[in-house]
Length: 406
Image (cartoon, rainbow, N blue to C red; front, side, top):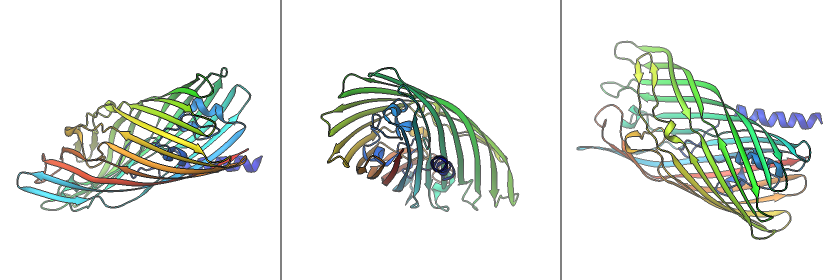
């Protein structure tokens, strides 16, 4: 028993200590397990999966006994850009980098009616990087948001049709931003880094029409962060080094997840999923620095994500999966930047799983077409107020998960 408890604790600590980031140059994260990656994120009604803590807390009632799961997703983005203003033109690409999105989950059946679950996974994160001496660098040459959510959850099964869950969310974010205040007559690089903890909550409910059809809904609340950060500027024209404290606020959006599952037979199941995210809370990214306020209006719009996933059992031990997801871009022309230069995204994925009564191992491969995006360039120099165009952007995705049943 002690060994098992140590294993669970170690898994949660690993998820909290490893930087959480999204190489897809996105903001909201859906890659919470290999099976979830394989099914395009449409994973709200999985049988016996501890990662239900993330995808649909009401479905942890589908876990029999105890289960611990560890997952990690590798993401590697690529993309090009162009800048235009009058006779001026510049082009380039993001610096190739990769990220890992790990997750750890534990579910325990308390009795025939009640379950407890806890997860440590990333809901919001991003990373982008560009050349430090390019015109883009006056908008952002390094942008990174590391985040992790710790979600203790309680679920109750009312009868054969209804189950529901409610949980808390302890959300941690660490923001790093680097940009050049100017490139001419000399570069003035600035570095801002801070972290914050904030609280949120979630609720979920499932209803089974019969043995083959089930619907569910998950709500996750807004989370407001007030962040204090360290600020540094180098090669300042009047001072060699400017440093001090910076301060800013940002509200991470609420979301509604709606899903439907249909079992054709004992071997094949399809799931449909839609997510509404309230990105209108991201109206600005304003930071007060020792060099003065940095005001960046965003005015993002609410957006939808649609996904379909299918899984088919080849045998009692082997299952294959496939998925497709479409993400609407919520970024208006006036609110775009090189921190999160994403358009309408399309993700194609496949995967396979091995399972026996004691354990499950899954592997998934995905390819995301990040989509083109055009926005007003807000930086310094000749291109300020011009047009930016990101294009030919894609992300390679690999996910692996391991679950141990007790």
